[in-house]
Length: 80
Image (tube, rainbow, N blue to C red):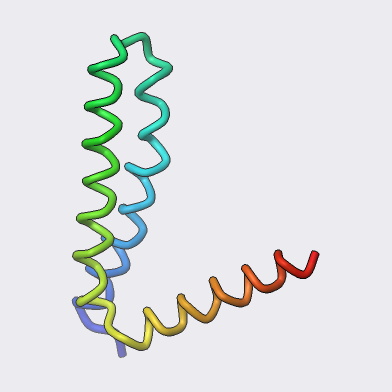
């Protein structure tokens, strides 16, 4: 049975992808380049912080499983 750590960690893990995917959008909404760069950097930092916060909550088995899936995906991509 999964506890609050798993659900909180998974929520943070999924949320960490949102700022990463939104960071390029800052350059297309008509802001000056310096403001867009600041917003983009802030979004990337937010994504990193939430990802790093999810790791201790999800635990080693989840991280190991994620690493195995990414490694298999990269090996398959290299073979093609």
